[in-house]
Amino acid sequence: MTERKTLNLRDTSEAETPALKKKGRGWEISEKRLDALHDMARQKRRDASEAHKALAERFSKADLGRYTFKRFAVVGSAIVDFNCHNLGMAIMIDEEGQDETLAKRRDKSLESVGIRVMRIKATDILENMDAVLQRITAGMRMRIADRNEARRKHNAENPRQTRPRYDRPGGSRNDRSR
Image 1 (cartoon, rainbow, N blue to C red):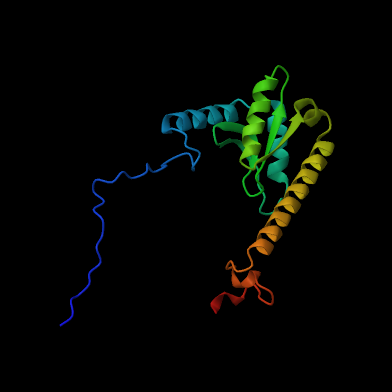
Image 2 (cartoon, rainbow, N blue to C red):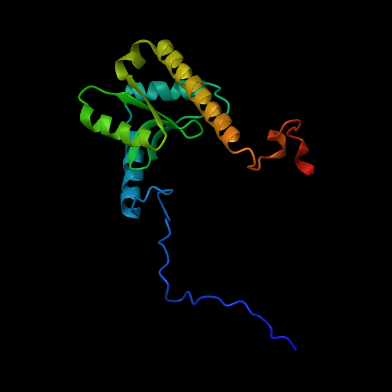
């Protein structure tokens, strides 16, 4: 008779396991810091400036499709004035008396993780809302084009990577049943 082979597994009871990132969505922020950021964002939503309120009102009335902007969103360890998660785009409103060096440092940290930051002056929002909205729309179109180009480049570099049927040549969204 032949000897039976069995699968030998290592004993993992003593092995060190990596810590799970329960909060912060992978940003490695402590729970205490993240809770403090959410509390600060909540407070900012309550005490919003006139420019924030005006822009938020226009965003709520606008039909942007799947692209929505959330007010005072926590992104990493920063609070941005408006954030569109689908686009990876943040809008910051520059108020008078704001610390420029801190704002530039925050912008660099957000851009290092792929979030494009658009800065708008509060006076421009209050005085010429239509021009501001045109600028935001142009920024959104540019960001959509950048993301489509990155997707095309990725697909060209990885031709054997599986894609959904509707994304393949000759397929449609209704071909999911195959």
